[in-house]
Image 1 (cartoon, rainbow, N blue to C red):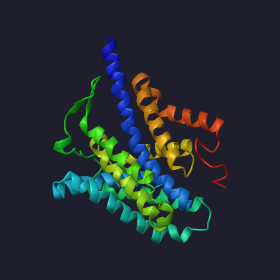
Image 2: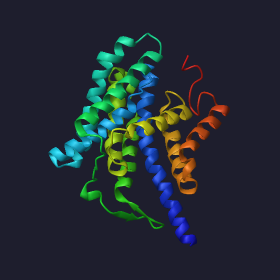
Image 3: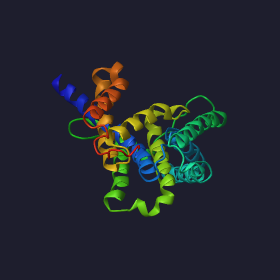
Length: 270
């Protein structure tokens, strides 16, 4: 019984790590856009959803998950560039609330548009055959695809670790941030399904990650993303009814100690 409990706990910890990686990809995009452009992008969840739907379409059209994994984020990023150029850019220099309200309205439009195109019923996005099955980690079996998600996120994070200066390409920041949301969407699709409202819950958790880590902090987004993923996963194991509440409890406790977040700078929102 003890071994079964240990295996279950280990599997849940890894599940939390996978969720944390999805949150990290989303939170990094949000932090990039806010940190360099001071724009709160409330459409980020819908862009995550769009990545999943585009992945579904491209896999059906090309019969290649790998091609879809590359193209879908690029298409979402290109859409993000268009949004920045024609919708967000005219609002620069105005109140921070203006782009927030605009992107919130855009998210509603995107959800309804997806419903019109693909319908209200959720879709199934299958992982590639090469990543089917589970891997024996010694203490538990874990789906190979979920380990792949962890690996992809680590590769994305290495871009920052290798010294890629996003500040020099700030004009592309909105596109890069939204492309990361699209990447998170297509990666999450095989695990969580594809449906129009899939971005609603995840965007709330992503904003919690950004606030806990500190607005505009990439290190904070990484640390907080993994932490929140583990909190949700472990709470789901021991007290499922409190899983959604615990993320806000963690946020409240962090803000009581550090109002600017774990790695945030005081006064950034002013």
